[in-house]
Length: 441
Image (cartoon, rainbow, N blue to C red; front, side, top):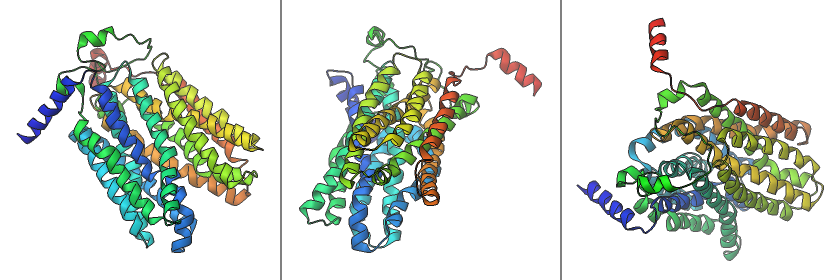
């Protein structure tokens, strides 16, 4: 009875909202995307120096928590997708935000490595899996025609958090004479203040649960929405996870996701160190990270809008080509201006990686089992991110240079580009085909 009454309350709110309630869903999901940056690598970067100085830990030990959590996320992501489809985004994201706040606050008392790895690792897993999958999936449930732009909004909000939360942490440290402990506490409180109420009170799994349809309150309103899209959508015949995994394109998209995030992690993790090697000051190198975040925000919206106008596989291929080519631009960095330009251009491409992969999975396989389908592809991403960061570091350790890393990243992105050109939308087997296959078996 209690669950039914809560649903009725949210249904009443959805119907009283003067505009389509899907935009409220974007706001609530976006709040979780903003605060997930409490466990972002750029946020951790602000803490590495003061924590190492205070606790006597090596920088490698502190940074290693992110890689360890990335490996753990490989095994968590498929479970996350199942939980999302089983219990809905409100339960998954609400619990994730609650735990992320607790782990962030707990880091203020992490004085031994095992406690730090446990607390930051849990937060990092939440960053990598439940929030990333849950937010994009619930928005894709509420929008079909406008899926590109609404997913892009999530990317923009994430980029804002990526740039602002590290600055917030540094501001708190400055208030307390460089003490890093109050900053972790302040971050945890910020997580709850921004996201806990919207996620818990406003999220609804899908528009059909409150008598609406994707994109609008009624089917008639949705039909009047004109979007010059050439996307193929399987929403009319949604796929189950088992059905999706039987298609070659599912594995192509999973592999491409791994390839592209291999490049993403390698560049992001080592960008500041590379710029320092090129004679860029520490302050300017940190500023380049802000330029990267700005580029990501711009790119998220641009690539998202393109998915509404062009076949999504071609947009994804263009993202791969852009990132591959811009990786080479880093080799031209010889000044602060070039450093900022390379970071801005690379961030623009990363905006596509935030937006296009969830859009293509929703378009190709529909909304029925989208959480499970997305969760099944994420282990490729998590493993590749850890491999990209470690691999680039090993190259530098052996050669004392990153010059060989960026051409390798370009080659990897080139492979992804070629695969995406072949990644056509899956077609369901016809009854005749199924009958022949059954007879042959």
